[in-house]
Length: 270
Figure 1 (cartoon, one colour):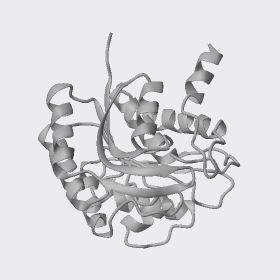
Figure 2 (cartoon, rainbow, N blue to C red; figure 1 turned 120 degrees about the vertical axis):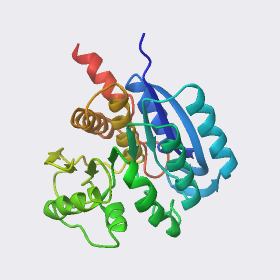
Figure 3 (spheres, helix red, strand yellow; figure 1 turned 180 degrees about the vertical axis):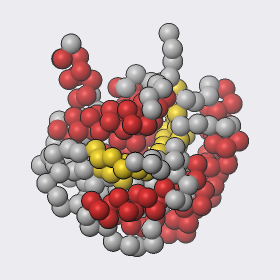
């Protein structure tokens, strides 16, 4: 039996819809063995983030060493890293262990508007994370921050932004279009050679908590199983579309996506 090993380096979401919890659910659904390095604890539910408690550098280093020195990984996904110190530690250790297939989800702001990345850490994202990314998956607001505040309002501007982020060192950029006001939620993919689209009809629901985490984790799972970037991103797009279509109206705010929807449909089609 081949075991595909996936690692998430991110924050814990006590509400279960995003972060480490969403990543591990996604890894499991896509038949990979998920592991975790927790960078921060959050007190979080469908109504927002009520507290962020960063882990110490010693705690993050100990987790990284424990996983990478023993089990190893076939793909890594990073999420909420919170500070420049943690970003630099993570980049250093991924380089130290010669990790391949690194998916960077540059988490900056929660659905409710709470800041999940310190202002001084943005430059560390540019300098330390983007250059080691096999794939980086910013949404439009995150791409605007990475590019110094330049506005992105159309598919054409998304293409230009993806090329500019690629020029910072990422091997492939998947710029997510869900924040634009179009009828479609089209993502733009640029691998240094070609621009391709990942289209999907916009789904009318407010329950989208954890979509970015889940999408990036699904890409990492695909890469871990040997898919190329194109196949991995297409699978991830199908996975997150199913998850949003069957999102869960739980709690009193923005509910999570349904991580089991994709596999259930796959089984139902057999």
